[in-house]
Image (tube, rainbow, N blue to C red; front, side):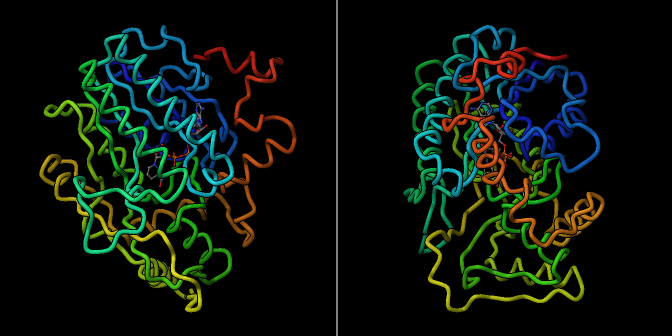
Length: 359
Ligand SMILES: NC(=O)c1ccc[n+]([C@@H]2O[C@H](COP(=O)([O-])OP(=O)(O)OC[C@H]3O[C@@H](n4cnc5c(N)ncnc54)[C@H](O)[C@@H]3O)[C@@H](O)[C@H]2O)c1
């Protein structure tokens, strides 16, 4: 089996590469990434060592030839959160929506059978009245969430028109340690805060609901989607009912696991516009053998171990390159990256180098 993973050099990609290498040892794994966060490593070993090939390319302009002989595409490449989506609104639509459809169309044309799309539960936005099912109305409140909604709609059309099997995996918010751990995700941020300052500061009043999933469990879900039969187009919430937490519960769990941690909740904060509880029954019925396994306590322990080994000590980590938006801002400020988040515009040796594939 030949599997192409776009956006493999981010946070989820390293966990996915390790998982697929373990569970599908004979598969040919090819990564495709522009390398925006290539230098933001949080462990010693380069995650890409597990792949058969790494291609440096922008998903907005992939060549048809890249898809030849490919069986499955896992499409992770994206501008991956609300703050980045807010700062780069048009580019977020270009990469997350339009380039996703372009990639799927190229895949379908090449005869790829399966396309796994990293979608997001954030498309439920502010959801009152119980846990949201896939058939419930969507309420995307941000450019990031809107880009995922638009991508799913376009993918459903491509799937119907071409027969490409598409799995839109509406992932919960990720957490846990990976080869390129991000600290701009709620649980990761809380653990980093507890380790570096002995306290967790909850910026909201702590009441919003936020379903979570560990990156390793995301990888197991993607493995399931690569191999699944059944419906041609599927949009499914990926997570587990027991991981529907309110933000204050996450802070309290971190405080329990890291003794001496204080919790500060901003009771006067205006209500958070994003709060959603999600129903995971469909995923439970479809993928009983690939249900999330990691517990919240294990996830905190995993982050604590990983971040300690990495040597995280700076309480100002929110200004570091472990926060994705900081990296983009810094690269644009130095001129290394264009405002359209493209390296290729520069036409210099770096751009040329990035176009080449390296074994
Ligand atoms: N992390 C989460 O909580 C979460 C939750 C739900 C869904 N998702 C989705 O999962 C996917 C992976 O998330 P992540 O946390 O690993 O994000 P990340 O930001 O760490 O990684 C994204 C990767 O995509 C690459 N990329 C961005 N634009 C590109 C382009 N134009 N061409 C080629 N590569 C490009 C980046 O270089 C980066 O390596 C994203 O689609 C994200 O929306 C993530």
